[in-house]
Length: 455
Image (cartoon, one colour):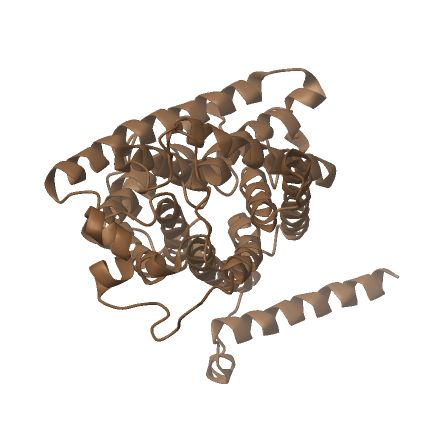
């Protein structure tokens, strides 16, 4: 029996070596020259491929954001919102390469990093991965945080102003918060935990959308003379549906990819993946039931936002909770997003796609869920409140979430105010009424198509 087990072990090692050779591009020449290949090399090769695949999935989420936001706004602004999503990643890549990565992961202090501008002067590996692979994974997250704001400020924001905003949040604001949590900063030292970004990505993007939308002011016709909101229907629910499915698919890379490896974290990846899926599913159900009860109809747009809310909510705790807890987090997030839509409207904050409740509110809720449902046995410093009755982890999560909200409100409020006073944050009334596709880009998303009402 011992001989058989030894043989199985050697066979597994041999398979790993062959897989690593294939994935890392090791040629037959290496074997001919007698180069040694260690298990550590194979492990790094497998981990690198896993993280790169996850980065590609997260990058594909840009298409999902574009489809969702385009579907939820009017046809006359479709080209504009898609251009913003496209340029988001372009500007994020530039800003994160030149400045952002150094501020987020470079050596520095508890507040910000200060080494690695243009990726110069850094070690070739970080977190057990090649530097460039790690950077690509992180820039995909940076782009996601930036693009959240496009939906909240849709249909009336100056395109030049948007380019300036997206560069600054990608190069400075997002990386500073990322340093606090993932770069060894002060929140990390406190024991604050955000596995894949409910705070770093979604709270940052959602709160930036909140302050930007408040400064930008509502769309023309959104609120009547009595102050009550008027529905401005999106032009393509099928397009939005496609976007939600793309985002759901990409979120497996977003969350499961944050393990930053595959060879030592197989069970973690499985738990993260199932938690991600369950939270999305229960978020959709929770939102649909809530809106059905409130308004008498199972509204598809709210169900889709509920699924996204569940994904946002589970992003921080996905590695630290059991599947049943992911169901609770998703269900509650779906309810929060339906109820949360009403608050911005009461404050006359016009958020066309629900970016504030989906990403801002549920980002905060997901962060707190780490301290409520998380387990020390799954990697937390302390057990969550429901297991121990100890509010320590929950308190730390509250501090981190509050600090992020305050920092984003102040920093992005300042950014938007300066842009408004210089370039101008909003398009003209005439341009807004005509549509930003023509005014900003001189083209239409649906050129040559006419839709006539039969009523």
